[in-house]
Length: 154
Length: 425
View 1 (cartoon, helix red, strand yellow):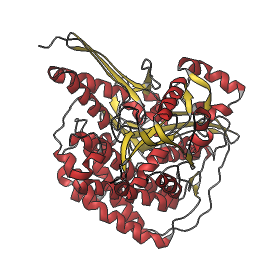
View 2 (view 1 turned 120 degrees about the horizontal axis):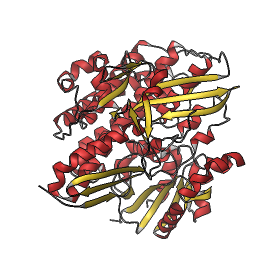
View 3 (view 1 turned 90 degrees about the vertical axis):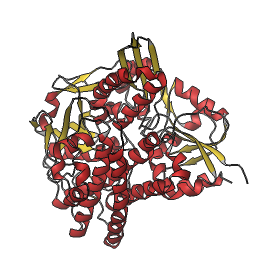
View 4 (view 1 turned 45 degrees about the vertical axis):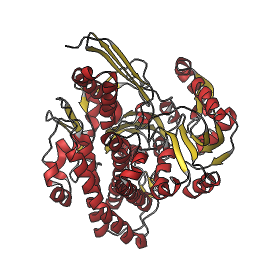
């Protein structure tokens, strides 16, 4: 028997709509996938584990703080495949909406950006680290998710 | 007598929506401080909505939260309509009720099966139940899927529903699909009754006197009514803000709220305590034994209340679908393009309040009050009460109980972190 793929799902700055939608896809795919995957990290469903030795990682959201940038680099170093999940991770929008603010608006949020050590600009996943594949949609599309994810399960 | 000093920290609580940390400081056996900090990075919705057109802003605020996006969409639409003098048609209101029911079924089921059951059965994840309690996981997936299919049928999708809009729905449901949707809803009733029984039998107990607050709707449809409290206050939707004041939580991305100077609780338990006589007759018949539990001050009965609300959502949705056909309608246009208005609905986690100011069709500002922010102080007081009882069992027991209490509220940190620094004139 081949070994089960170690899969992890991480949420960075966003509404977590893609992982919620993924749980809807689980309604009809979870039992089948559990024969092929071991879900290692998914805070929406289980307690956290060490970030180490993943086969496939799905990431939603934009990278908006120094801490998040550090975390995503660590995740990248510990997975074979990294997939950007949803429009935020791929294009930076809508969760990176502050990137499009007027100068006046940027001035108004400056205090918080500094206080919480947020990056001057929200980054797409591809701007932060190397990305192997992507699943577009806001939230992700069922068919596209299944098509891309299943490529990495064999 | 236990006299000890403990500093308990939980970094990134799991099986809740969004990110939060918890610190409990115990000195000489007494709780000195409970800090529940929301650790979501700001996405600055308060700024992002400014200048956006009135009909695009509901889809924008839907992105505050993937979990309860339908609640934000619906609450914001109501506020826009009240502001601009739009009276939605009877069919639109009916479809909004069905959309809210689809959300309640999915969202409560996610919380109960995936977040709470692992604690009840002593495992880390619902996935660990896939061998031992395979039936229950199958039931969970079916219940969620039927809610998801009802969302698809009425509103186009469960997350960021595309058809629900200011003034009406952009699409009407396909009549050919209706029979299948009704049949599927009917098929999950036994599973939901099973779930209700599980939470009725659950021995967890933490009772503390608090004030419950909820919008009491005539048909328990989560949409329209008067705000009721367990202190017997009756408050119009538009006056709700006048009774609240915000409480700063240090180092958190969210502040809490008090109602008339005291902590309070919103959500399923508040709704069942204040409005259970309005549940659907079929729900009242089949859950009669379980409904005797209410009114209850046991926070863990929030789980039981959610399970009963799933049954009500199924029963009323079936009735509405069986007795109504949908016809194409025009989207209703605004009477005016400037003004201020309030929309209040019951989101899965409790009362959701939107206050808009619109000028020439563009958003000037939005203020919101989120259920989880209203429950933050209540959670803190519950944890404070729990600690002395468990202190003899050590740090791990306190940690586990604290997580269980927080999860009982089904908190949503993605929501709680927004719109909290608006300065009021």
